[in-house]
Image (cartoon, rainbow, N blue to C red; front, top):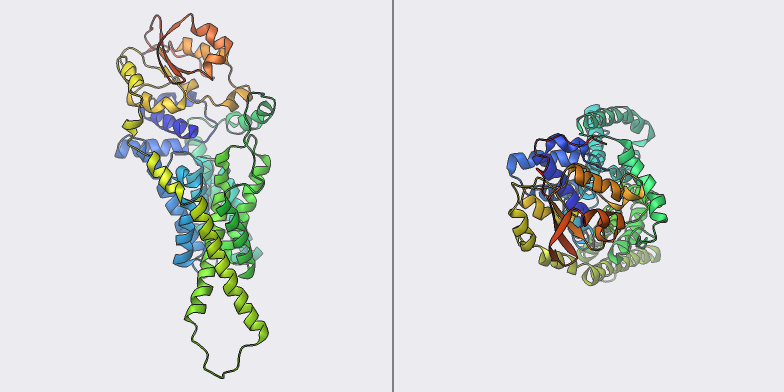
Length: 477
């Protein structure tokens, strides 16, 4: 996943060049980078730190869901929810990566869980903490806001309008104070990057003939297990009288639909926004179905000759048992058919990070760590660069398509940065940089190709400069 490389690159930059972070073009908030860089300083540098942070964040999310649904989910619901989570195309791989969506949504769910109490509304202090946690989630990624409708419906269902409004003031106080403080400590907080680049990229993507658009699922996901979970879960929520955890899931699902309505271009991993509420709904449906079947199985037999129950009650009980069998058998069959292979495939694709490094690129780059400070490359080559303690110039660490679409970078500007920093090594892609006439014309006069690895080519500067070691950096943009 491309975003995984960018997030690891930003963390590595915060460790090696913290004084240059303000020059890094970043269309996401900085909290995830700063927090994981601090963890790396305390526990040791490596990609396992941000990935473990994601795993722990998802664990905290499920703890919050268990707390919100403590009277309806139970062990059966949580176990089935974990299976649904593990069987999704995107949720499990993203839950062990360094991308921003899982921890952002996870801590937004924790913010909602802090407001759920069984014996009356929480105090002001707890509301302030909940608001602060939501601010932190937004400072990981703004799309954590999709959980906000779920939080609102949860509080309204638990406490009613009047008590919910009493909580709003302290919650907003905690949210505002934390949001402002985190913005203050961020290396940069530029709205033209954080929001402007996304909105401006919409028009650029629509007019780009080379952009291969991904199909947008009508219901936010095309995963059969998740869709069935949503259908069965909605029916269960209505039958149970709209329990608080069900209201939360419905609200978060509505928030995901609002995001889907405005998100363009659509990327497949956006399905993660729908996975959170749909998994909760599926867990609720499975828990209720298991409870109905357990009660039916353990119900003592009626004595011979005793009066049979009324026709209405008998039909209702038969319907409940049949519906429960349908829910569990359908979700189980769909999970076996479409979800069971996901954990196995993910496990088979994992290996030690060192085993996935390109040995040829490593050999050439390791020959020059003292000669050149910078190396320009695509994010999937950042593990090789990190291994050699080399990085792209700060302005070129993150160069996604949206940056071109929004007019915030051009290929001419990229060549200017490469010249200004006197970058010695370039790892170029045949279908990216090497199809741009402006870049190729600049490249052939300054660099020579050293080796080729698949669609990647390693180029070295013909007259290596000092790599800007100790020299004046170009003006910050």
